[in-house]
Image 1: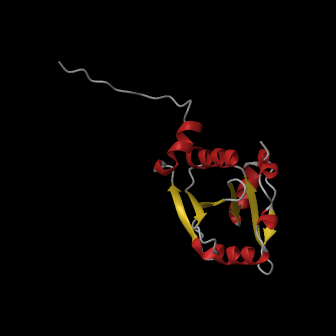
Image 2: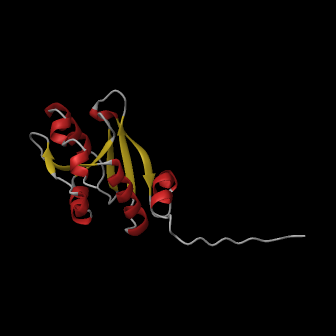
Length: 152
């Protein structure tokens, strides 16, 4: 599934002012090794990644055809957009196989760049907020051990 064909280019989806505001917001986030994914809405929901995470995604998920573009007029920020299906596969891989922390950020309804908030947070030891994505997709074929005790 090609994420680049199913999602709008960020340079087309965001005007110059929105790009600059987002770049400013993004630079305030800590660089602690957490993979941050941004949920965006338009005609349909899609996701974006920025900065160092884009390099990881473009190396790890080449089969998705991730198109990297720079957003922001003065301060350039490498960015890529991808589909819901790509998001689900990436999150599963990041949490289950690559042992990375993941955050999903969504924009508040007022559409201001400062209105971004973390809506999901997970790590390899705490996937509860991603349960619907990871359990149905990534652990579907995982063996399960069940212990039953019968008492009379």
